[in-house]
Amino acid sequence: MLGLVRVVRALVVLLATVGVLWCGRASADADAHAQLRRGIELQREASWSASITALERARSTGALSSAERAECGFYLGAAYLAIGSEAAARRELSVVLDLQPGFEPPPYTSPKVASLLGEVARSRATAAQLDPRPPRPSPSSDGLELGFEAHRTKGPVYGVVRFRMRGDALYGSAPLVARSPEHDGTQALVADVKPAHSGVLEYYADALEPAGHLVAGSAERPYALPFTEPAAHARKPSRGPSKLVWLAIPAGVIVGAAVGLGLYFGLAH
Image (cartoon, rainbow, N blue to C red; front, side, top):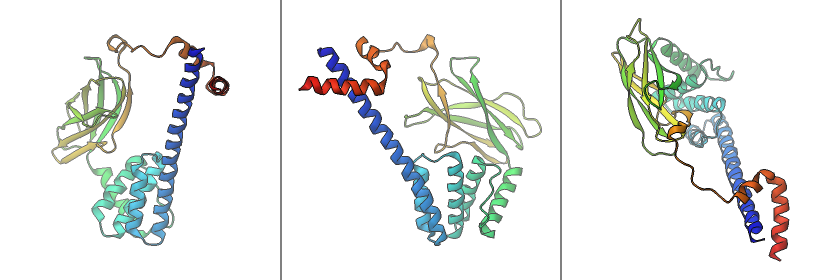
């Protein structure tokens, strides 16, 4: 009987934890969307500084979709341009085009913002660029080969890939190595990375070519890749809960919780 009480308590704790996490995530999503809408409304009132604050808050939650991040970046670019910070506006509009290369501004966009967006798009079309390629298992280790391709360069490209497991504070680095010689401004590059353990690998590339600086991703917006440690090197799993708990949980969380709660309070009294 004591074992059954422990099972019920474990189920109650499990459901409470799931409920708290779900509510927290839902609250973050709602706040992000509210801040995004508020930031856009403030622009219609020409409250540029307040709009920037709201939009930055919306983006910092990490709860916006890719389309919403592009929308947020566009309005940030418009607000920065309105307060005279053209460099910041260009940066934001470039991020928008990273997220949506064919981004179309709203029909009521001011000619000044539309013109700057066009300038940014044209400069990106002729500037050197570093693009990610699909990762693949490394042929020389148990890790990954992270590939990139440089376009429209003026010569060889040299750089590094910064990487970490999600949750870690610091990035490590691995050199970018040319897989093929530079030809007509195009060069394939790879970095051999061995993650420390299973989880989500975050990474970005930082490189130089004769005409300037190249980046793919950033420390603030890295690429994310789920990674599973090879079975031969995986850590042995620690001993988990008793067999009784593992047999009880698959019976159905909802039904199990309802029956369990009844039993628990019945036993308690």
